[in-house]
Image 1: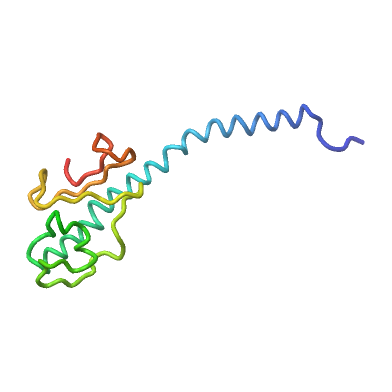
Image 2 (image 1 turned 45 degrees about the horizontal axis):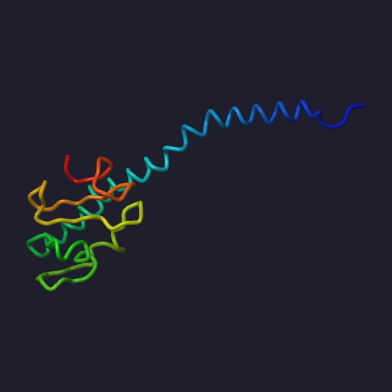
Length: 131
C-alpha cells in the first residue's frame, strides 16, 4: 500500500498554486488604489459637498478659505446661524491628509475642494470637484 505524496506530486501542487496566484494577484493589486480614489470622489462630490451646502443654507455663504473645513465641525466667528456640526469627523482623505478647500474657488465660483491624491503633491492624480 502506498501512503502520502511523493516529492514530485507536492512540487506539482506548489507549481499549480503559484501559477494561479501569478494570474490572480495582478488583478487585485490595483483594487485598493481604485477604492481609495472612489472614496475620495464620494467625499468631495457628495459627503463634504452636502455639508458645505447645508452650512451655506444656514449661514448665507460658504466658509472662507481661512475658516476652511473646520467650520463644518465647530462654529467660526463669522457664522450667523450655525446649526452644526455638519460633519461627524475631521475630513481626511483616504491617504491620511486633509482635503484642500478654497473659497471662493479658482475653478468654481463657490469653492474648490480637492485631495492631493496618492503622491501628496499637486499633480495629475489629484481628485477635484472640477473637471
